[in-house]
Length: 584
Image 1 (tube, rainbow, N blue to C red):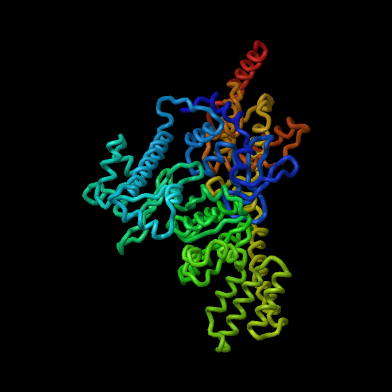
Image 2: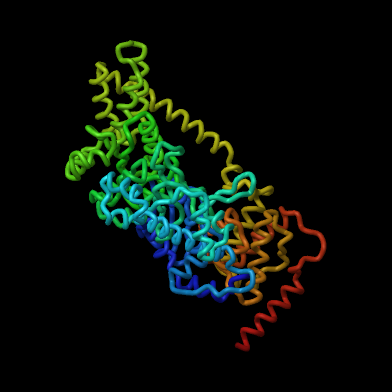
């Protein structure tokens, strides 16, 4: 292993998994566990659990699980060495380097440094006298010098390789510039600056690292906005512009805008909770990031057709997370920036406080689709309105909105409620059919979530789960195991985990999730944690283990040849372990 095991043991000992995950998820203690909304999938009811006693997490919804290192890997989208580096930095430890280790981590650090240097250079360019026209773009938009500095805004010269020359002069290679997405290679192999003649917006992550850039043209050139491509340190679908600032806001909500300038203008006006997606529509990851940090989001998109469609998509994603979703209706201006300039921050605050909830917005959009002077279109509109209302969770909501729509559509409340109930029944029948398919497939229901780990022999597979769960809970039970080898397991990953446990136990090395982490894939780790959620009886464990082994050896296909873990070898290791324990 590239990273010494002793270091990993100390790192895990210093890391409190509840404290770690609390930085990403709001957790509430219930019994001996902590619960919260899963950061890996959208949900309204908390199914994500954290066990301080076992220092592990598990989601009963999406079935992801593991220890502290696995959590950082999943949340930050990094590999094992980088996750170790992030955790080490968090607890004030330095990862020891060894030959071949830390290469990817060093590469990431170099790209962070390169982007930081590039951001400084862009900002210096903006302040240079010869680039006054670029600075005037921001000042003409009403941005103060303080705001320009706080957001690190900049300018890229309209030259082919000025950034290349500057950064290579500081010791960075052309390959690093490519890896950071700062330069582009054409078909002939020539490198040139990606951003040229644009005002620049640095994109900063939650740890304060510059991870990418957005650039806007100052003329009628295309594309109007150009963004960094995805790199090993930047993923536009998993980052939000200005979230590093908005997460510190005390306003109790997040305002979601369409672009950099709207967000910056709102911050300058005192609305420090504004964020924007990065050159892409809102994604499920964006929705989860927002839901982890607030209980209310106000969508502030443009009122044109593109903005309305984007708002509809955002509503669907955000509503799944269970947070309150409102939609801002800007009147008397084309966007929040213009509204604040014309009417002031106080008027915009009133606009936010009076923003309509997403239900009203969606109903309004439905009515706008139809010509209500035509009877057939009016009927179709009523049916679609009923469908939207039928999906509301509360009966009071359904009655209130149903009665309002009945009045507006000039029909009786009873007629509208019948349409709502009819739509509910259609939805219920569909859900019942889906559930019936699952009930009729009990074997399928007991299979692992990942298709790559499916059991060929269900009875043996469940017994193998029992063996692994018991050994992870108490590796010393291996002293009671007779005649079981990895080849006896019908589920290959269980055979491999069994061998890893056996090797570690005989060598007096720790047996834990974090210890096994480097040896398992994410899917395998998720499945291992899922079986550790099952209760283990503390009485008569030896008999339970014997029963499991009997099932495995009866149901499974016993491997041919001599096992690496035959009885003689196992006895020799046990004697060695016993001798060592007696003489320590």
